[in-house]
Image (cartoon, rainbow, N blue to C red; front, side):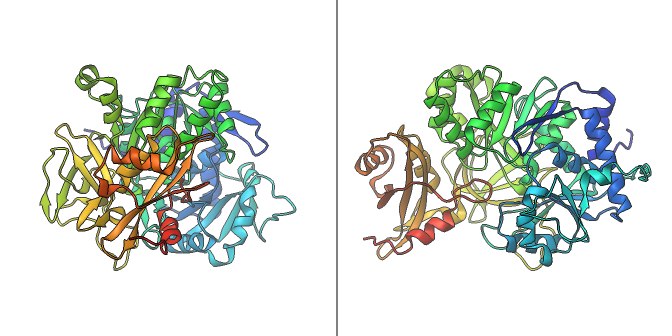
Length: 538
């Protein structure tokens, strides 16, 4: 067979060769829409690569981006790879101290930054190793450009830029670097190879995964600075699918407008985004035409069954539950009922199945272990999920002295406690660090959260462990109610009591205005633990 290298430039070559007519739409800071084509994307990505080489960037150098979801960021995705460098997306929602640490740890040589984010850059620029800063957009007086900064459009329009010779990339070369959000300590870097990105893009496109093709219009609401927007920019480009990039404006009404105006067929984000969208649609029946929207992918946290049912029954939109990790490039599983189950099960059972994390994508293998022994796939026995595959990390970037996340026989330990049923459907019971140990027995915070969010009056719920003088730990729940909800705390207790043993029911159910969230929209349980640390129990 030919020695054909699976690289990000190979993805771009396909778009150049086939000339997809699907649009790339980008929402600009003034909320206007910019439109371009894959042909223009490719031409400008080559200009980005030439500019980077002109500035001294060489093969393997890390080039950081600090930007929202827009076409300029997409050009950087491909231009950095064409130059042979490594794309490093900085999470703009992190604290400046963390951004300074991450940029220094990665040894980023150059930064491409949105002009609107210059105030954030100013808070850590003097602690970051950037030799050059390139600004996309026009700085304003409130946020002037740092000394020596370069203009992105000026660089790309420089007529002195010589065409860049093709870089002889190998598929095992590094293509992208993403950092975890550091919920259990310092953020850790995950280095993706070109091969991993291409195979991941192919795996996600499959019918039993995201089921994507050139006919689709894809809108990644998940940020391009978080795990490469779940790989969707690469998958869409590989297929020639249309792309809608929502920019910095992620309000629900704005997202609904984009979905309707652009005929979006596929979109993806964390559950908190979709809970807000479902509430908006329920409050505005028939206000917009979502007839082209085939699939919403929900990942990053468990998708409540009531949300899945609500979208399908009230609005005719299919929600697909997915699970993954930054360490998996990042998609690992997708929950689609097998054809025989879809036909044989009652609708309620199908929805329950779809609320699980699902089965692994082709080429991803899974197992679970407890106390060193493999647990059976019986849907009941819990163990820590371990994974392996061609887009699973073999370790962390420049990780000195940390616990090795890979087992001696080559499986990555995820930290998720799961059950796996006989058909391979994974159900996450909890993160190992979030399990609640009460009186020597385990309580799943995820199960309690899911049950609470299945109540029609509950919008969001998060459950954490609080120290107890007798039982070691007890659950405490923070609950956000839907608008005009009338449910009481006692009624929520009864709701849980009908589904779980009495000792599982939280000692405290706190009705709150909002639940703190991490930089990627997950519930920030560390903040809740701090909030309830001194609550009186027992």
